[in-house]
Length: 505
Image 1 (cartoon, rainbow, N blue to C red):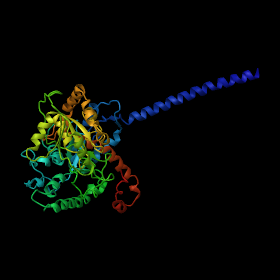
Image 2: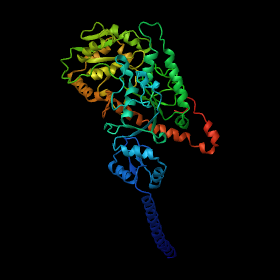
Image 3: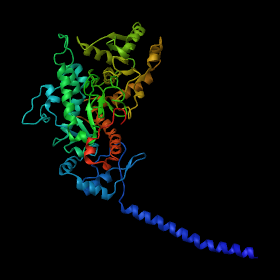
Image 4: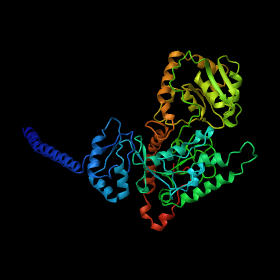
């Protein structure tokens, strides 16, 4: 009886304790709910857009409008910024930065770019343009300086990106804007260096037919040395060690003298064939397409049966380094019927003949040469000739968002060199499969078109978007590098050197 009473007492005493615990838990949850609510609602940014450092530093009405216009979706990245932080950003924003944001109402702008006002000798001066009225830039509302034709055009990336930034400042700017120019470097996502490095190489370093060696070779080297001295003296470089700078070196031989000194920057390149991996790599840098020299196949009504040539290649056959495969494939394929494999160049009407050949071929070979990439891939895309890529170390533009296997055939070098392997593979691709890839080529061809003014979804906008996707990683590494700098005296902080190549990335 005593045991039963004792048990009852225990049961009775547990009831009030359980009620007290429940009420305490409810109050605790409610208190956190009100605390979180008081900090303001979170802002959601679509993952396909780069969160701009100034997106919350506009006025209240514009910020609210931005928040309402951007809808969250599954997998999107959420950026949480409370009202106090937004107000702090507003207070530190300069009038110029506010004007830059108010002038552009395009929701697709995801990248704010600060561009150095370099002397024209680094950019349009290389096109024999002369500055007028004290400005270092041409008035792009009128006639723009023309770029040299022929093979020079394939590495003209810096020209198109610079024009696009200048156009973003026009009163009636084109609607297609992934990037806009800002004049306050502290508000920029990336610092752009407008050096036409490929043009400098082509103009000053390449040997002309009647010369044994280039008379102007030193000019290219001196320009690079002058650029390095100028950049490293700027406050923007000192602030980041160059880690938030963007440099274009699309020609494989451009920036040969400066690249080792400018290694922390983000490079825009054609491939990594002539770069040590600690200087340039796919995690840090951006691969951009060549500008094709073959004419685009407009109103292409061809089909599988109306393209008589099965496999097409025309170009330099005997190459050094990784290009040995061209020579081997020539011997394997030269006697195959409906295969065109011949030497060719841009000389003596070469471009017109190559245009005709690619437009009348089902498949076009893209084989590694002196470097892993070549303009031939982008000529094939413009011709709607399904590319057959034989280059083990090739890196492709926009491959983080574009599946090349839908419109390209990839073959390992070791397999391609097996007797009959390549030709049997290509002959095994039937009409339906080829037609699917042909249709896909027509869908993606605009992604490789360079033009001024730029248009939505063209090569200029795609390159800017690829740069934008690098910015979060750049920003995170910069933030990490600054963790302990406040504990050091100011004079020591200013003397801290950037890490050695390979240690930062």
